[in-house]
Length: 631
Image 1: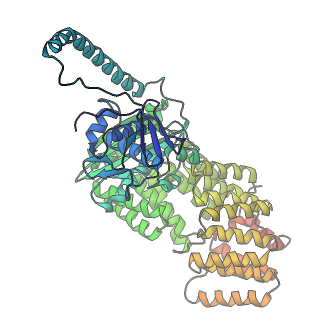
Image 2: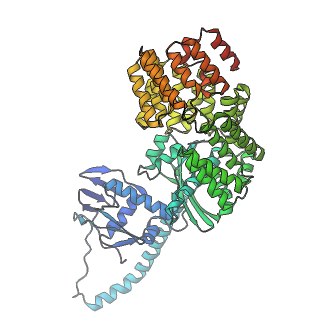
Image 3: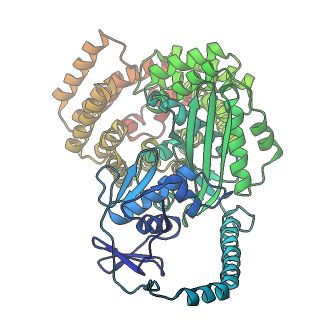
């Protein structure tokens, strides 16, 4: 590319004008927000309209040598900002065209307004003698001027470097951060699970640094392929900083590039690339986490430092299987997740996270709403996996939370459950699942203020999680504050109208308010979205009975009876319908069967309005006593 042609101070294209001296972009006279590196990229493209500006040329102009920046990622980000400001797109460009594997080209006509300096060349008729005299006089001047320009240029680049380098004084205070989905740069699109898994692992490592809040992967993953600006994302997640980057896998090697960016100012604070063998990928992840903690000046405790430094090697096959298991577990495809966790555990029997994954999966496969495995079978397998995980690594917060869930939901051992929940949270205060499950157990004990605090802690760590949002509703519902419960469920459904749990919870709140038609509508939505689960039929039957439609309720009982001849139907489903019919004898009889099944639905006996009609019955009071609820 040749030397830049002489430019006017103000350049125009379409509805836009660029003031090169002031560094401003305006549209129809209204100033647009485009500053810093993105503006410099636009400036360079405008200086060479209709010409290809290579990536290298942009790098050398905008990011001087030795700056701590991932050039490719920073350039893509800057181009995206320019396109956003111009209302342009990569697919149908009006202004900036991407030239694959080369660079970019400004394709719109560019004109100046004529107020710039005009360079007048001396005419050819100038006499040679005068030219010779002038050249001798000017030679020293030009040499001196050149030296001054070189010095100024050196100072300019040095200043940019020192401004950008991460120093203790330059880094703003960071108390919270989010790790956005790392971009998969591998040629194979099927490796998406791998980049997602690395993101998940990095979040897990950073979350163990208890002095900072780290947003959960459920919320972070919402921004995969998002075109929102980083300041907007930081504001939505309520964090001080963002970690973003790329993952590239080639053969048995992996390269991880990460950047730390201040959320409010969009300023790059730190960047680095890590490369190593796949077998040591856990070590690479831990190294990234340590580097981020150093960049934000977090003082690691000896235990945290030791944990991040002691990542054991793991075979490539086992780690692949584990990542696939977490990938499907996070997508709520539990049977697929179970298969991959089992294979990972067989390949690496000493890998504790694989055992914790098995425990989490078995626990959910046996609870009401899933009912994939018989409850006793699922819970005992979950117990074995959680116990083995803790034998391998007693500092693994996820395994403590899994064991706590078993003590709470199946053993009804409330004290041991609380101890394990508190242990999990102490090891990893940023693990939202531990806060959520602990909140549920506190609700069932009637400790509603504490339950609400834990639900809100889970939501702060995972603000876009549907389950975390819905979980805040439970303390209000059990406190008989039904209007607030309805509002929370409705808000969660605004996030995703197909979230079946919110339809179930909204239906119960409506039913408690006596709004039976609305309740039945929500229960039918729950049935449709959850695959006609028996709990949906039972919930409809309960609402019909309470609305006075006893025939309709008995129709629900017939449906459940027919269904029970095809597959097991939890006894609690019959108990719910009989409770609605105020048939206490049958309701208590089916509750006793549910007690023998150790149904997780019995956990709410003490607080759920569904059972208010049974509370005066001595048989019900005895059942509550046998549940072992502490006073």
